[in-house]
Each structure stands twice: as structure tokens, then as C-alpha cells.
Image (cartoon, rainbow, N blue to C red; front, side, top):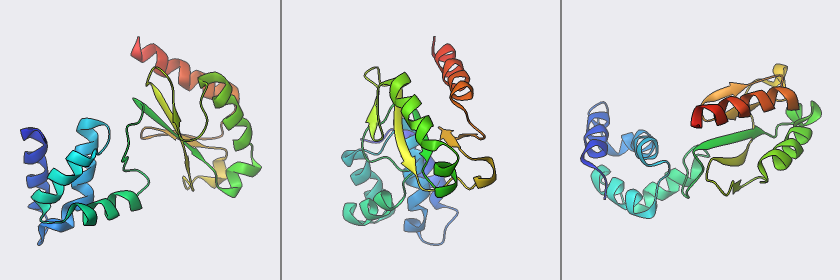
Length: 158
């Protein structure tokens, strides 16, 4: 069941479009912002508001890699796996993350703090390797720089 706040935000977003189903991506982002991911129940309720079938909305949700159809950690780490990042050391960052967090691609830490996912390209090839945590881009990374970012996130959570 969607909260009244979520429903109101989706309805406000629909008002910007001539057809309500055109707001589907923004509606999914609203649900995810409030709930952390888009569950089957949330997808069904959102589809009803938009005048879509759940299957139609699921097709949209699963097309975009920034819409999560299963639960993720509080922080989502997107490791760029483009050729530029790979050449510049992304595999070393992946190994460092695996060692530091105890997870590999597609996994979430036991405490639910981090999920590690690959992303095709972050569009910052001239500053590879790169990753994005939540909506914050980190470029020209080394394991030491990555540790500082992770330490900062850990301190914020404490």
C-alpha cells in the first residue's frame, strides 16, 4: 500500500504530462525515494494510479538500471565497468570493495548498509576509474580515496 504522501507526489507529477502514464518513470523514482526500492505491491499500486497494467510498468522498471526491483542497501555503490574504467583499474577497486565490504557485484552487506552493482558507463571516462555511491560521483579513484569515501559514509551513519 502506497502512503498518502507517495500518492500525492505521483499525482502532482502526473499533472505535468498530457497523459498520466507518461509520468511512469518519475512515479517509480518517487516510490523508490520513499521506500528504497519498488516492491511488487508498490508496482501494482503505482500502475493502478497511472492507468497501466503491472506488467507494463514492470517492463519500464526493469529496463532502467537505476530502478531497483529488489531490496538494496542504504547506500548503492555503482562500479563503472566501461572499458576506460577497466583499463584504468576498476577491477582493482572491485577487489578492494570485495575485501573491505565482504560483498561482490549484486550483493548487499549483512548489515544492509551497502549494495554493490555494476553500471555500464558513468560518462566520466577521462577521470577513470569511477564509481557512484547513491547520487554522488567519485572519479580518479584509488583504493585509498575509496576508503576515505567509505569511512565518511560510515561516520555519517554512526
